Amino acid sequence: MSARAGEMLLNSPEFTVSELSSALKRTVEDTYGHVRVRGEISGFRGPHSSGHCYFALKDDSAKIEAVIWKGVHGRMRFKPQEGLEVIATGKLTTYPGSSKYQIVIEAIEPAGVGALMALMEERKKKLAAEGLFDEARKQLLPWLPEVIGVVTSPTGAVIRDILHRLDDRFPRRVLVWPVRVQGEGSAEQIAAAIDGFNALEENGPIPKPDLLIVARGGGSLEDLWSFNEEIVVRAAAGSMIPLISAVGHETDVTLIDFVADKRAPTPTAAAEMAVPVRAELILEVANLARRSLACWQRGQESRRGELRSAARALPKLQDLLAIPRQRLDNAAAQLPRALRANTHVYDRRLSMIGGRLTVRTLKDQIGRGRDQVQRLAASAERCSRQAIEQHRTRLRHMDQLLSALSYKGVLSRGFALVRDTEGQTLHAAAAIAPGTSLSIEFADGRIAATAGGTDDPPRAEPKPAPARPPSKRTTDFGVRKLQGDLF
Image 1: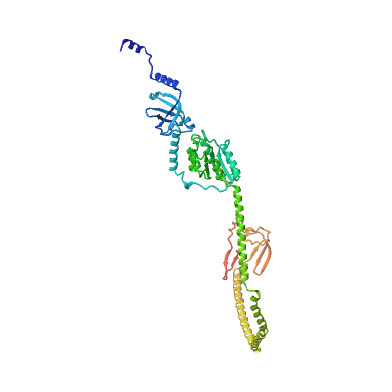
Image 2: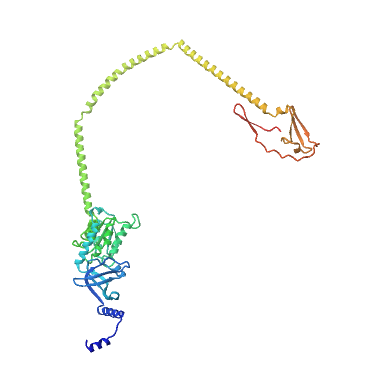
C-alpha cells in the first residue's frame, strides 16, 4: 500500500456499528421508499403469536425478507399463503439486528389471474375434502316461497332485475340485506347477511325467508373474489334456508356455486328458479278444471247408461208383486179358519186347567200355609222369651253390682255422710267453721245441723290428698261404672 493510500485511510471518518447501520437504513429508505416487488411467498407458517407475519419473497435467483404488521394483516383482502406468487407493495428498510434488508408490506395481491386460479383450486380441494360440496347436503327449493331474502348490493342493477322478474312471474315479498359485493370487508358482510337471515325468528317482527338468493353482476376474477372466501362458503354451507347462488354471468364460477343448493347462471335466472309463472299456473289450473269437469261428465254419462241398462234388465213391477199378492190372498182366506182352530185349542187347555182347580185343592194349600205360619209364630215367640229372660238376668246382675258399690251400704252399718249447704261432701272437721249449716245423711234419712265448737286442740290443717281418678270397675257384661270415695 502506498503512503498516500495509507494517509487517506487514516483520515476517513470512524463509525460505530450502530451509526453505520443507521446510515445504511436512511440510505435504503430514502433511495427506494415505497416499492412493488413480485415474488413467490416462501417460509410462511401463519401469523406469529404476536399477530405479525414473517416470511420471504423469492424468485429464481434471489430472496428478500418480508414482514406484515398485525394491524395491516387484519385489513388485507388477500392473505399471504405459502407458494403463492404475489405483488407486494411496501417500504424497503433494514433490520440492524441481523444486518439484512427487508420489505415492510402494506398491501398484497396475487400476481395475475393464474395465481388466483391456483389459490381457488387449492381452496376448492380443501373444502371438497371436508364434504361441503356433497350433493347429499343440498336442500330442495320450496315450490312457492312466501318470503325471499336477497343478499346483494342495494344500488346495482342486480336487485332491480330480480324484483322485476319476480313481479313478472309471481309477486312475492322480498327482504333485501344490503352488502358490499367486492372490496375490503365484502366477504365478511356477505357471510354476516346469510347468518343474519338464518338467525331470524319464525314468527318474529321480521319474517324469516323461505329462500335465499346471493347475487352479484358479472366481473373479473378479482371482482368476484369475495365469493371465493372461506367465510362466505362456510356461511352458505351452514345455511338452514335453501340458497341459490347467482354470482356473475353464466361463464363465471365461484366457490359459493359449489356449496349452494342451486346455482343460477344469472341473477335473473335465480328469480326464475325461485318462483313459478303465475299466468302459467292459472292456465294449468283452468286446464285441470276443464279436464276434471269433462271426466266427471263422462263418468256421469257412463253411470247413466249403466242405470238405463240395469233398468231394462229388471222385471216389471206387476210381475214382481204377482206371487206375493197371491200368497197374501191365500193367507187372508185361511186366517178365519185358523183363528177358530186356535181359539178351540186354547179353550180346551183352559178347561183342563180349570178342572184341576177344585175346592179341596185350595183348602189343602191353605192348610199347608196356615201350618207353616203357626210354626214360624211359635219359633218367633220362643226366641222372644229367651231374649227377654237374658235381658232380665243381665239387669239383676247390674242391680246387685250397683247395690254392692253404693255408699248407702256403708250408711246402713252406722256411718253418716256430712254435706255443706251446696251439697259438697265434707271430709275433715278442720274444714268446718263453727256455725256452718250442715246436712247429715243417715241410712234412714237426712237431718239439718249447725256446727259448734270442738274440744280438740287446734292442729294444722292437713293438706288435702291429691285427687285420685275414680276407680273403674267393669261389670260382667262389659259396661264400665264410675264410683267415687265415700269420705
